Every structure is written in structure tokens, then in C-alpha cells.
Length: 288
Image 1 (cartoon, rainbow, N blue to C red):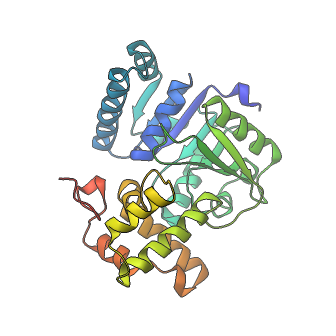
Image 2: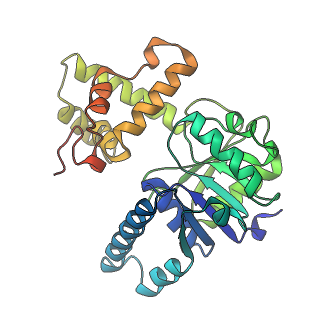
Image 3: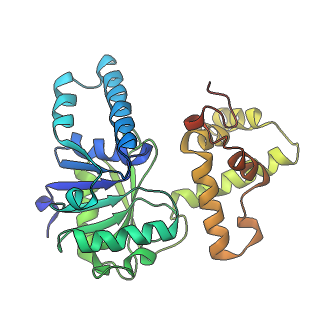
């Protein structure tokens, strides 16, 4: 298969990332299915996308015709079988839990066409852990977007030992067709490139905050005004989801058994209190 032969893309998972990845693909002219097991999640995703795209039209960033054509390319389905039956490229964007992803990839392998590439948007779980439950390991890779997917330009394409060169080159070209800037990561490593650097920033931010050197607000200001970051680390945690970041840290610790990889005390407390950031109305900051 060649990149130009990709016509239909399926995104499994209709959360913030999954829904926006689906819209990115639809805006690029692909036929797209966004799949989720819950109809109410799909309805919420559709409404959120409508609001996002309406704001873009109001700001003059897009025309109503562009948005209408993109929505015409989108389907929202609860049936996994119907969602992937004609798919050329599947992007998984569900919860960051290995056993849940493995179960999904096993199903995808049996339902998707034999030529279809099965990609994971995970930034933590390397695709070799998912490829082993399929009969097409050479067609499995990480295809990692950044949040928010409609805005952020970078996509990390990760080549595991199991991944064929053809799969990587198709994925790199697909990212370009989506108007993204892909980078190729030549071998698997936890967190890939960007998030390994970001994790180091988060870890230091938590250390400074929990040891009383500065408030989280002051640390955010320091990163924005001193390092020219668009948002501070605590603002970013609220944006991407404290629950997601907790799962990532817990998964990393389970893999390495290194105490420094454990979730920070404050992160654990926020997670347990369901103060997950913007999605719940409260994280480090209050959004109510």
C-alpha cells in the first residue's frame, strides 16, 4: 500500500484527542469514522467539534463551506465492526491502559482489512506491546499527535523493531497530508522525544512546588515569561488532563520500578479527588 491509496481513516476513541484527530483527517479530505462504545460520548464529541469549528469560522480562520464539507466526511459510530470494515488506516486514541489497548488491537486485527495499518496515538505505551497481539506486527506503529490536535503541528512516528519501513514511510506521508510536521523516531523508548523532555519539566515543577520554593502559579509565570513557553506546566497538566498524566506516570513506574518515576504526591492527590483539570472544571486552577 502507498500513502496515496489511503482513502478511509478510523479513529477509535471520541475523547478530546480522538475527536480532534478525526476532524483533522476530515479537513484533509479523508472519509473518517470516529468510533466509541458509548453513544453519549459520540454525541458530546460531535457537539464539541461543532463549537470548535464555529469559533474558527467566526474568527475567519475557516469558511462555513470548509466546515460543512469536513462534517460531511465524518461518521460517528458505536459499532467497531462497522467502523473499521473499510478502513485503510486505524488510529487508536482510547484510555492509557495497556490491557484495554491490547484487547482493542486484538479485535481490530480481526475486523480491519488485511492491508490496514493499526496505529496507536499513545505517547507512553510503545506499539510493540500491541503488535504482539496481532497477526500484522509489521503494520503496527505509534502515530502520536499532540493536544490540541487541531492546533499542534507535530506528529511523532515511532518505528519499533516489528514495524516495516513501508508502514513508517506511509505514516510519515500521511502526517504531511494532514498538514502536520512528522518526526521519525528510529527505535522505541518510553515517552518518545517530546514527552521525555516535558516529563523532566513536570518533575522539576512538582519538586519546586511540593518543597515550597514557589507556588504553582509563580512556576507557571516563570516558564511563560522566562522560558517563553505558551503555557506553564501546571496549566498544561490541567489542559491535557491530570488523570491522563497520572496514568502515564503510573505506567512508567510499573515499567521501570524506579522511585523517581512514581506520580508526584500532588498529582496523585488531584487524581484521587477527581480534580482532573479543565474536563472536570477544577485541577490546579478553577474553571467553574
